[in-house]
Amino acid sequence: MNKRLSKGRTVFALAILAASSLASRADDTRENRGNDPFLHVSSAIADCAAPPGPFETAQEWLDEAHYRIERGNSCWIAGRCRLANSYDYDKEIAESVTRRLNSLNASLQWREKTSLWLTLQRRFIYLDGCVSRDFDKARFVSALGETADVEKVIDRTTRRP
Image (cartoon, rainbow, N blue to C red; front, side):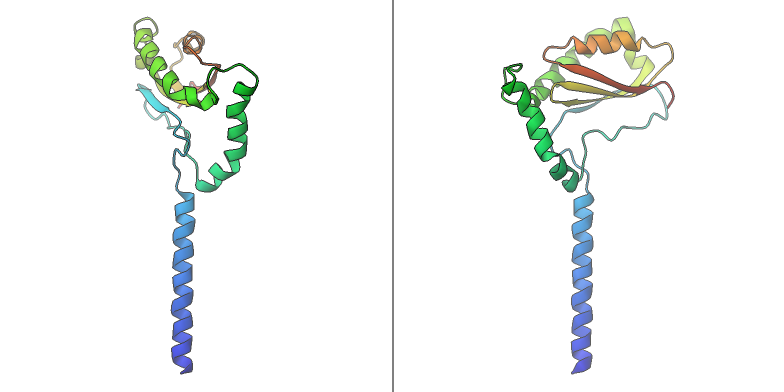
């Protein structure tokens, strides 16, 4: 009887261990939980590492939730936004910035001189990736900032992959 009880405890302990392992793995899954637009727009520079983008674990999402709500609504409360939450602009901005990028390529040749990703969050464009030394980054960032409803462009690019 003691052997059966001991075996039962072992099986039970293994089941709990397996379940907790699965739960921790599920919690570590990185997802775009806020559905923030994340665009890979060019890939001319080899070995340019992809940025983490808006992907986060469930715990990171929970830790960020209050701050995200506060940032999103502060624009409306301050009377600077026509929409109730600044994150509500992001999909619209993604469409506008895509059109703008298509018109910019002839003059800036950004597709031929960059590997870039754009993350859009609360009317900000986060610009990540690699640019060639002869790329006019200041002009490109300025042109992105002229997109309707964009509050700020944050340049996090590098000239070395």
